[in-house]
Image (cartoon, rainbow, N blue to C red; front, side, top):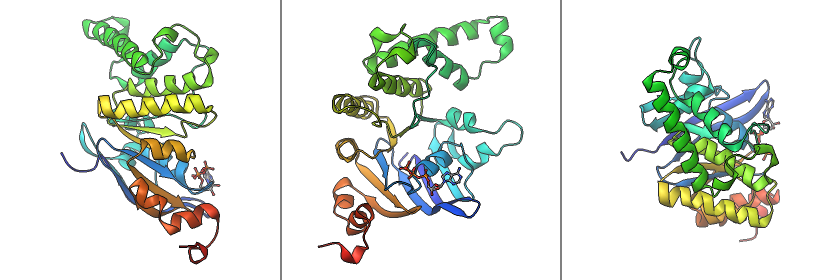
Length: 272
Ligand SMILES: Nc1ncnc2c1ncn2[C@@H]1O[C@H](COP(=O)(O)OP(=O)(O)OP(=O)(O)O)[C@@H](O)[C@H]1O
């Protein structure tokens, strides 16, 4: 399968009169770390919310070529009765949030188990009667949770309250929780926000390991350009809701349109 894992096709998102994304198109290739960057208010989070099924875009299409074949994200979100972002998680897109959203009064391991209950197809009856399939699913969920805690260098924290961990570790718990759902694509919303430099380095290492060891495809919004340049091999730049550059880190870093957007001056004014 050589097709991109995610295809954003001419997506426009309006909130009343505000156009947060305008005719946005880009692809995420399998195994890549793609970074979505841009100045404040450029439309990055809105784009993420469309991709992860929190919003239905006003126009355009977002296709996931995941484990169930081509899936139209917008159709999952608007499916009558059962539609919603949980179906997008099941289809293979997991995410973390700009503001950490762990269950702070639960242990780390419980946070990872809850995520898997939402992602599996067990129903209430199999739980009540504790069928063989249910018990196997539970045992697998625990194994998977410990596996990802180990990968995120959190094995010793399994039974601590999530809210008691230092911020950098909480970020890694969020990533472990997302990985437990077995995503085709993991979307990280500003993972370095609020981290100190040494926590950011740990985070970079963890994200790089997801790619090298687990062939995980990653889409990340990030303002920390040091981190973006270290981890990504593809960058899409948004400004005022539109894609202004798309390419390798080297290409984007030298694109006058990007320099202009960040400096807040017109393209013509940027020195060659
Ligand atoms: N729910 C909403 N209702 C109305 N306007 C919104 C909504 N969400 C976003 N916007 C507007 O859409 C534009 C893009 O916002 P968005 O949060 O997507 O940008 P961003 O690039 O993620 O910014 P930041 O880097 O500051 O997080 C902004 O003008 C914002 O005010």
